[in-house]
Each structure stands twice: as structure tokens, then as C-alpha cells.
Image 1 (cartoon, rainbow, N blue to C red):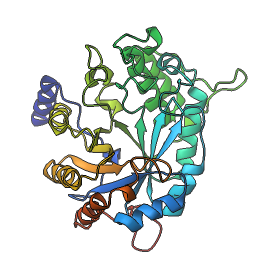
Image 2: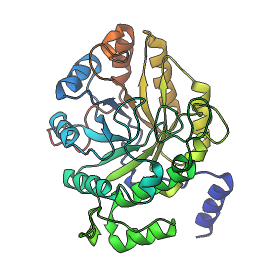
Image 3: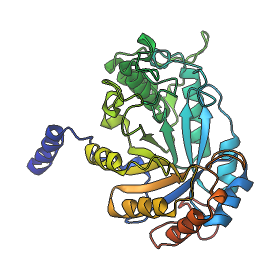
Amino acid sequence: MLRRAALLAAVVLLGAPALAPAGTYPPRGSDLYAGVSDGGSKQDYFAFARAVGRVPVMQAFETWEAWSQEAVKRWKRTETRGMLSLSTSPCYGCDGVVSPRAIRRGRSDRYLLTVNRRLAQWGRPTYIRLLPEMNGYWNPYAAFDADGSRRGRSHRTRQFRKAWKRTVIVIRGGPRRDINRKLKRNRMPPLTSGRRSDHPPRHLPEPEVAFLWVPQTSGSPDVKGNGPNAYWPGGRYVDWVGADIYGKFPNFAGLNRFYRRYRGKPFVIGEWAPWDADRPAFTRHLFRWIRKHRRAKMAVYYQGFGDNNPFVIQRYPRSKRALRRELEGKRWVGRAPDSRRPGG
């Protein structure tokens, strides 16, 4: 008991996140997961697999208030473990369909209840990369515009942190009484069904979900109040920590600082790709970095959409070969552990 108390005190003093709970669904032991973004069809996944080798995780990009079963269907058809990247915007630079303040106030509870129910029905572990790159001005839930000006009360970082907490509390599910108690503790209104005549279920399903907090390693714009920590919701609401990195902007120094800052959680590279130049050295450097950092457990390639986008791996033959060689390493898992096919 004394040793445990001392450990907890040390964590608090260091300002580090709490240790990750059991429900983070990491790979076993020293194994590693690779993933790829969902290009919109199972054929896109299998084209990627033919190019570099099979990967066990598929990341789907979904818009708030617009739940679709298509991603779940593709996870099933490809026998991959699902990851949802949830944004309030349907495209790069588009307006958000809901503000962080509105989420905090419960205006999106009906949508959160849908996600909770659908993922429970899916019945397999799912990663949720919630509101990623939140300190990047191109996302409508960021607190700042590109020129460094603030976006107003509804987009303050405090509103973002509350919106994140509400989302996690509701999607994780459990007894409605407990959910409302947690919301009240965080000074938020109780759960609502979104319909005047209905009440939320007394007990929400409890899907197997893990939440991934993936900001930019520094703010864009890089102004006071837009650093990653301004958007940190607290360790009990985060299961994985991570960052994105691209060959066009290979900021490994920033990645190292960020990795050291947020301890005690498994680490994910939420997006990576060569981007505009065939740089196999970048791929080798990134995978060497992952192997040397013991908390790094997953890296997801951003494949983009369509054959002419600047991210599709087939545009970069030398990087493609380098990636295939890396994924042939013994630590990289080829099939999701919850696959229902033989050998899964």
C-alpha cells in the first residue's frame, strides 16, 4: 500500500498522466500494430495490403452527427480492428456541424448515444481518435484561427476539454445514474436523449473502446494557449496518447519532446506518410524511432482518398519497399487479434 501511494504521489508531482487502464487494447508484449486509413472500400485496403503487407487496424474518418455503418462493414470484410477518427467537419477547412460548447451542453447526446449503441453491437474493441489535431487551425474545433486570433467563447480550450470529457463519459456507457454523476462532477448538464418525450436508457451498453488523444506536437498557429497541454482533458479520459508526422514535415525533435511530456500511456502515430517526395529514409527513421520507444505501440498510414492524392503509397515505390521490409519484422502483427478467420 505504501509503495502504491508513493508511486501515485510521484506521478502527480511529475505532472504525468495516470497509468493506462486495462481497456486500452494494445498489442501483446513487444508486438506492434500497423494500420491504414479507410479509402472507402475494401478494395483500397487489399491494394495497400498487396503493396506492403497486411495490417491489422483500419482507421475510418467519420463526421459528427452522421453515423454510418459502412466503416463497421469494411472492418468486418477486411477482418481488421476498427479505429474511428471523429471530427465535427466533413472535409478539410469545412465548417463544423457542432461547436465544442454545444457538445459540452449535451446538444449532441443523441449522436453519442448512437455511437455507444452501435459500437456495443459491433462487439469488438474499437479505437476512437477523438477530435484529432485539435490545436490545428484547419479543424473547426480548434480555439484559434490561422492568424492567431481566438475563435470565441464556444471554441475556448476549456470548452474543448469539457466536450471531450462528455463524449468519453457517454460513449463508455454504464448506468445512467453514474453517467449523470460524472457529468455533474464536471459541471455539465445530465444526459439527454435529444427528444423531449424520451429519456436515455437506464443503463447504456459498455462497448470495448479506447480513446486516443492525438494533437499536433506544437500549435498551428504556435501561439500562447494553443499548445497541446491546453487541450489535455485529464488522464482518466485518455487511453492512448499520440501524434502525427509526415515526410514533408519530419519533426522528430518535436515528437521526442512530446513523447517525453505525456508519460504512462501507450503511444500511437495517428497519421504518417511520405507526402510529395519518395523518402525511404523517413520511413526507416520513423520505424526505428518506434522500435526504440517502448510505449510506441501503433502507427497508422494515411492513405488518403483516390489514386491521385499525394499520400497513396503506390506513388512512392522506394518508400513502399522500405515499408514492406519494416512490416516483415517479427514484432509487427499481421492480423487483428479479434479476427474471426483462422489464424486470427
